[in-house]
Image (cartoon, rainbow, N blue to C red; front, side, top):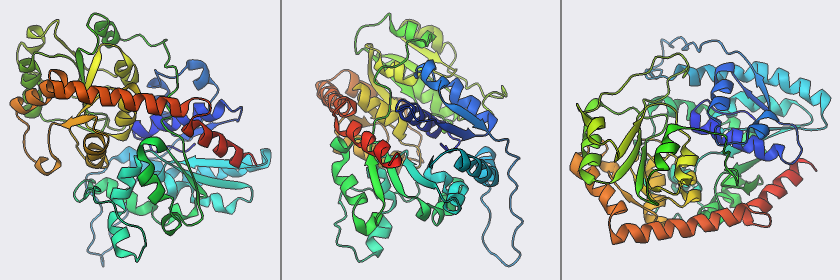
Length: 445
C-alpha cells in the first residue's frame, strides 16, 4: 500500500489494508514515519486487532527541495507548496529497493497506490513478479468531471453526461502540479480499484470502464470500504455529548483536514448556527500542515461568549474527532460538509444528509453528485460564489432547511434509502463484496 500523505487518502488506504488483510494476505503499508503514525493515531473507527495485522514499513524521507529554476523557462514552480506532500516523492528509490526484496520472498508483489503516487511506484514495471493498481479515492462522477475536457477532444463514441460540472478553478496550483506529474506513470498500472458503489454510480463507472478510456485495464468497484462494524473502543467527548440528545436532532459541522477558514467566516458560521436554534456539534480545526504532532496549531477565535451562550445546544470540538462514529450516532441528523469523498461516502453509508459547502478539488463535483444526482443534500454555498463571504443568514437558512422542514425530512428519507443500498452491497453476496472477492481472486491467481 502506497498512500498519498493527506488524511483522507491515508484513511482510505488503511481501511483497504484491513479489508485485504481479512483475506489472509500479508499487507505492508509503506509511508514515512510521521504519516504512518498519523494513519494509526487517527484510525479510531477500525478494530485495533485488524490494524495490528498490518505491517507498517516506514521510510524516512528528506525534505523536498524545489528544483532549480531553468533560466530559459517561463514556467514558475508552484509557490504554495505542501512540503510534506512533495517530500513523499522521495520514496521512489527506497520503495523500489523494498519491492525487490519482497519479490524474492513472495510469488507475487501487488502494489496498490494512490493515483497521486504513481510517479513513486512507476519502477514496479522493472520487477518480473510485481504489478500495480491505482486505488481511486474520489467518486466516479468526479473522475469523469476531471477528464471531461479530454473526452471532448477525442473522437469517442461515448456520450458525455450533461450533468458533469466544469472543474475549472477547482484544483489548487500545488495539487495540480502533482497531478500533472502522475500522467505518464499512471499508464503503467495493471488496473483500477474504486471506493464507490456501482449501485449508486453505475452510469459513470460504465463510462470509465469503456475500452476507449480504460483500454484493457481491469477495474473493480468495491466501496464503501468502511468496516461493517465500527470499533467501539473509541471514547471521545463528542460521542458522550451526542448521547444526551434526541435522535436526528444534531447537525454535525466539519470541513475536513485540508480547509482553513478565516476568522471572519468562522464568526458568520457561529452566528448562523446560533440563530438556527438547531443543536450542533462543530469540529473547528485548521487544515493539517506537515507534522500534525508538532503542536503548532492555530486556535480560531469565536465570537465573545459564544460557547457559553450555546451551552447545552451546541459544542465546539477543537481536536481530532472520530467522524464515522459521529455520523453513525443516532442523534446525528445532518452533516455540514466540504464534500470531500471520504466524508461523502461515510455520510452516504450512515444515511446522514448533507449541507454541502465545497472548497476545492473534487468537492464541487461531489456536491453536484450528492445534491442533484443522489438528492440527499442541500447547498449552503454555490461554487460560483466561492470567493464571497457566506453570511450568517445563509448558514442559518441552510441548516433549518435540512433540519427543520418537510423538504429536509424527504432528503433524510432519501439518504436512509441510499444507506440501505450501499450497506447491502458490502455484505456477503452484495455487489461490492463480490467485486472485492474477484479482485482478491485476480491478484491471487
